[in-house]
Image 1 (cartoon, rainbow, N blue to C red):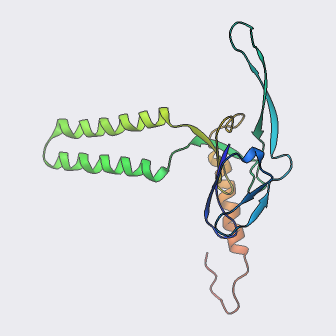
Image 2: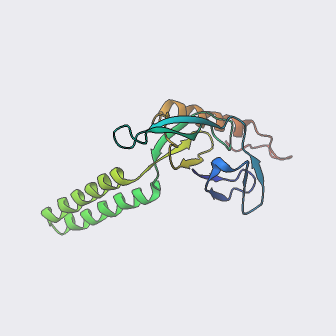
Image 3: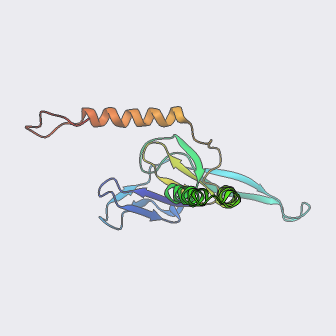
Length: 182
């Protein structure tokens, strides 16, 4: 399983593979260590069938139980694809169709829009899923990472967003700062 997260100490992006076999997570930028909490992984037993009963067996693998970076157990399944790239594809398709529309090329306009939508559908179908934390936005991808977790829930996201806003509001301000930033 692979984890991608922002280091809490230096805010560098950290990508680590084979996290099931590790006891700590190390940031390559600041060399900060985070120990993996006990109970973060739970064994999951899956029946493996090969052929018609011949070679059937049991395979055990570790499944993530809660976030390794923050203490949150609220994780959701999403596509493992950068949102900025997806947005860039949509904006490029929109701009190209606007140029075609301005040149009064009606068929080309709708062809560009259709091609953009088709590209979006194809990417959605073939991109793998990953697991993301509502609280710290760390991502987990790999074999079995998304099992037993649901998709995005706006209510849970809003709860964590509001908690972060309140914590930032209540954070101590530097001496002499009479106008706290909200």
